[in-house]
Image 1 (cartoon, rainbow, N blue to C red):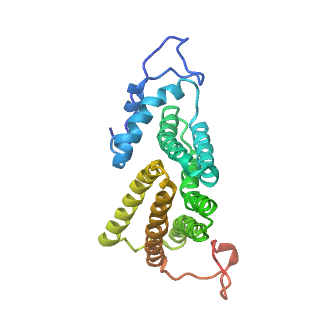
Image 2 (cartoon, one colour):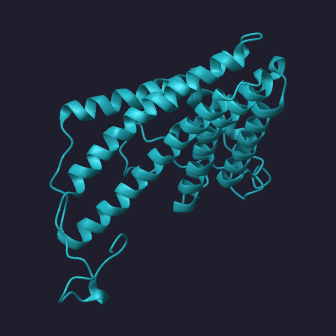
Image 3 (cartoon, rainbow, N blue to C red):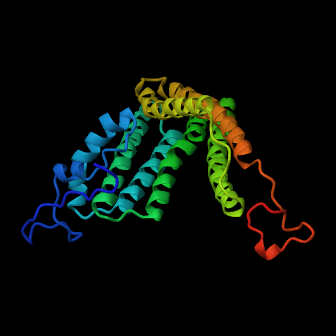
Length: 281
């Protein structure tokens, strides 16, 4: 199905067979028919997240749930998971793994609800990213606090904080690059730099390892007695080491993409009213 093709119409149903949102009730068949088959997701999404999410979508859709409500639920579950990492005894950290996988399935659900309810919006996309990023950003610090509480050692607290800072800064630079790239394009035309095959391959490999690693890491919390320790080391590797390498690659990409002269609004003869922002001295 192409990205411009219309979705198959929902089957006609009796007037009393409608969801609280006023639309006809759906089944899994309608959920699966609504996908753009040209979009290729990662294996863990295709083989785990999507099948479970598709099976659960009718339950929530037919009860009037919206995509943003599902995203809010995911954000609440992620917040609860972080509180548990910090406060629960080692024998109960497996609860965090349960909450993580509920968030993972919820991520598939809110996309389905937005698409089927024809309610996709820019805010919804932004809000979805907020919910996604909260867990991943806070996890190293929360796990470090949990280990510090259990062992009295200071280094997990410091290392977790550093990993969280790296992951946060990575996101900041990525979004800042996109913002400045759009600004540059509007001021002086398209960027001339194109990522080479080697850098693209390394970025893709890094992204895949991190994405799949994030999915597997919570399973370590199920290990009796040592789950939190192993989980902490895994996310240090993912967000500290691989995140740091990704940040270096992103800074290089930013340098190559934005290496173009511009005129400051403070330069003699420049019209401040015509100068764009941000970042003008």
